[in-house]
Image 1 (cartoon, rainbow over the protein chains, first blue to last red):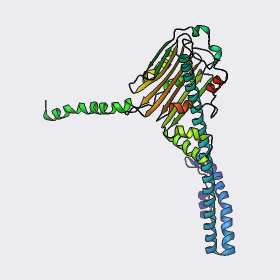
Image 2: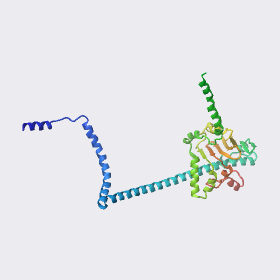
Image 3: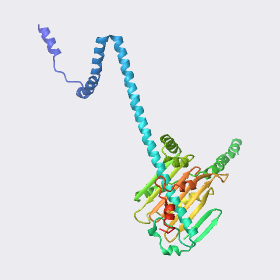
Image 4: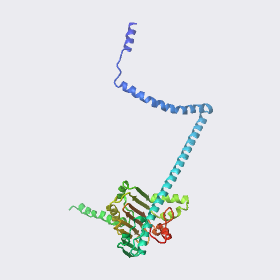
Length: 158
Length: 194
């Protein structure tokens, strides 16, 4: 009896925790919710699988799972394709708007230049027509207009 | 000199030859570097900055063709063979927001012999400059590019179109695509100046 007591006392003697024990426990505690979350996510799948297996048998359950996977893939592809088409449409609209804006600015500026040249060459020494009329002044009209037309080039100095 | 050094001696000519070979190609490049104008965007009241490279233009072309919009037909004709459209337009609320050096940086690129200045309208009094440049191909019949500079005290616009472009076609867009019809308006008003 004495021997048993001694052995029990030895077995239950107070021992200090090994170094790093607290840190390891805390690390495990922190990991625990994540592990739990993963299992929570898998739980419905597991339940569904169990139900299908019990209801239809293992082979049929596998077939159902494969069909479901294909369906999910098909729907994902359709959604992705729709998104891509929508994105292409959006980029196409943007590119068209940019083309139109660029051509508009270019055309307006070319017209402005053409208009100034035409007015200057038609109107003797009068200053060329200005799109922004408010900036046209008489001193311009009396300005020293030098014109040179050489081989289709137009050079005007006002 | 050692024999192998003599062999290497002639190697210096390779980069030079490559340089000479590439020079005409570089000289014929109608794409201008407009990056130095980007700093003006922060000072400008209104900015139009359009950068359409070849692939974006092709994409727009395909999209417009597929869309079959009648309004796009004219634009489609113009952009059909282009490989780039670059527009930078700045409107400022007060004058002298850009320097002569900004304009000169663009003009310097156009002084290249491949560019022909078609129109130059300069008003020293109003500090205005309108210039149109065309780059013609080796056969002098096809246009390789167009550059337009319109500089006013409160506005600076630079347009660079890369590819065969019909300038008359482009400037004849009056009344279409929202382009104001200055010529027509002018004729209607009995040729009076605005």
